[in-house]
Amino acid sequence: MHSKIYQITTKKLKRSEYVDEYDFEPNAFMSFADYVANIDEEEEEELLESFDRLFEGIFSRNGRTVTLLDTSEFIEEWRKAIKKCADNLDFTDWHSLFQLNEITKRTHCEYNTMLYTDYAGFEYFGDFVQRLYAAHKPGDKFYIGGILDYHW
Image 1 (tube, rainbow, N blue to C red):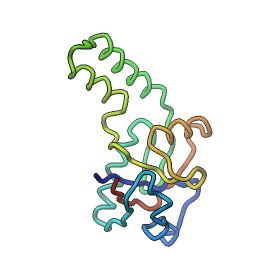
Image 2 (cartoon, rainbow, N blue to C red):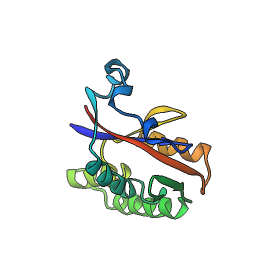
Image 3 (spheres, helix red, strand yellow):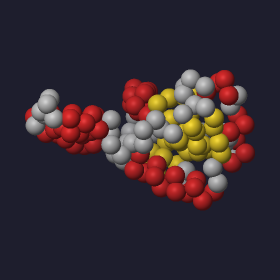
Image 4 (cartoon, rainbow, N blue to C red):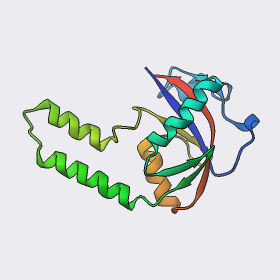
């Protein structure tokens, strides 16, 4: 299966500083990937647009610059969706269990999307978001560097 790695940095990078497939020795990422590959410019543009869905309610994007948002409204809406699903949960119905699982995973988040940051290295989406709000505040700026494909 394939997924993506987004490089997120606290400083603006030159294109020559973007992470690429040659930055990783196979053993450095074998715990979660078979290999990493660069993507072409057309796919990169599509993935920048999908970044907006991936981080809906968390970041606002302008080009490759992203601004951390106040998530109180997003979290409240997410809490309501989880509560509504949990209130109707039927443990004998696989569909309701699957639905709750999907809501808690943020269904618009591509499974196994990784972030590569300049301060923590590789992180899965959920870990990245938790660390983000523990260490930063709404309005803080970040930058999208390289975007890679990986196979797991």
